[in-house]
Image (tube, rainbow, N blue to C red; front, side, top):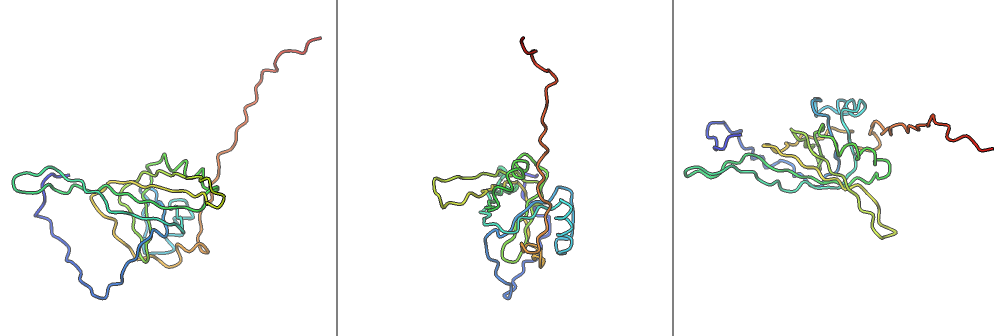
Length: 200
């Protein structure tokens, strides 16, 4: 990345559409896409194909947020301010499917092979780089408190994820298809040593 601000690149025209629909918050759905896997994000059937073959991991019902990113700048030179080199992004979401996803989150936390996506009121946003995933949970001293996954996502990029209209029928749980988590087999090692011979 250059330390100098660029005045050479053309800028896309700003759209001042007074009729544009307002986008509303909350990470309502979230998930992950394998690095290197490409598909048409506008095509609902492409989403379902990716989910069915394991290249897309979709979590249809979540509760979360993606707060303001932290700006990463280079040093200033001359009369110019420091150039914006990129952003440190974070996002968090809550996953209510707790017991069935312990193995999934244990494996995902050590992987850097997935990009992250999330859905707001009408659009889906996907990172352009792999993310780090840090799942956690809080077992409270409360007989009525649910135990859920609290997942932190982090990534660094020069670009904000741009929204794509959410295809119909992708994130509804009633139509959601996902590959179930298969735990690794339990291996029992039997000793070949018969032990000491009985006395007498």
